[in-house]
Image (cartoon, rainbow, N blue to C red; front, side, top):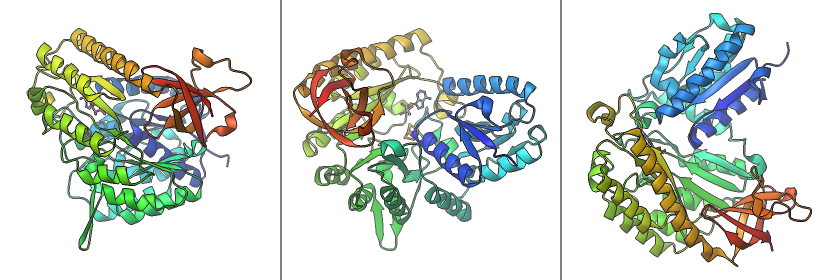
Length: 463
Ligand code: 5AD
Ligand code: SF4
């Protein structure tokens, strides 16, 4: 029998990228071959995101193309996995293109399901395995998922010598706008032993940078006997693993952010001085309506404390503009927070009502889309201005970067430099650095002297 080819299309966050690469590794182990073209594939797997309506619309548009493709290739099998699969469940099977629907907690079953669907020649098979993931956790299922996670690695980034390791699943915060707790279920922290085993294995394979992943990594807690392990303990334990040079973690929630994490960052040289810590808004009344459980002042105090403990720390944040009831004054408060926070960068999103969330059920989506657009633009423009100014302090400085590879969109500034292509690297603080150098530097550390800066990028030359 010829080898079956699978094309995986991934939408959404780092969690999804990790799930996609775990599934790819499991499929390879089961004898499938990966392809990067849907037209070559016997099966297409779409990993989906539900966080905004736009993300779901893109998936439906993709499914539209696949439906069309199936007219000439009726044997093509299409599987939908991830958050949208969990949110919409069996109803997705009504879509002509879809054969298989797999929730985020059932991904270990993907190889068997694709095999079964391909054997019976696609169109006849309709399978959904999303379960109600908020019912009391089935311990056997949780263990199965953890074993799957430990067995397969995030392999996509090996060439860049980076990998992602999940430390927890789910979220308990129930921010009023957010669908994640409904589709990813309650928080479950993975055992430290499994996490360390995985990092050790990655280090043996040449991985030098590991990013610990979770929706709220600062609430990581795992009890074993007398002891409860927290994120700071994981950082400490992972720091001892030979071969790992840089450790990161995303994402943090500003409530209950303990000093132990900042102290670990200050004390442990491998822990990158970088914090992604979304504020979402700078208005206390909007923060309350979002159920974020902190005030703007608490947030700014936390950043001040972080900077006192880790002087070089770089901070990134997320914001939602146009949340129901957001007035000009509320937006001004957000702009004031951005001014005060001195971020490295921010991500700004227009509020999108998500079915089933408290905001969607209780609050009208009252801010017109033109105003959302304006606020989105204004906030990014403000941040750009601040960062462009702030980044000039890097001029003349030498920074260590982990080289990620060829620059995808060559920057004009120094695209033509003698003999070498333009490369991109990142500092420990997550700044993007563009420079010319041999491609063989990919996946390695290099020292770059900065000679030009902009709001989002630093430019320089290898030392
Ligand atoms: N609408 C807009 N943005 C959202 N986010 C989460 N839910 C929504 C929503 N309903 C944003 C938050 C979060 C980021 C991952 O996505 O800013 O931090
Ligand atoms: Fe969503 Fe809030 Fe949980 Fe983040 S912390 S995943 S925004 S509910």
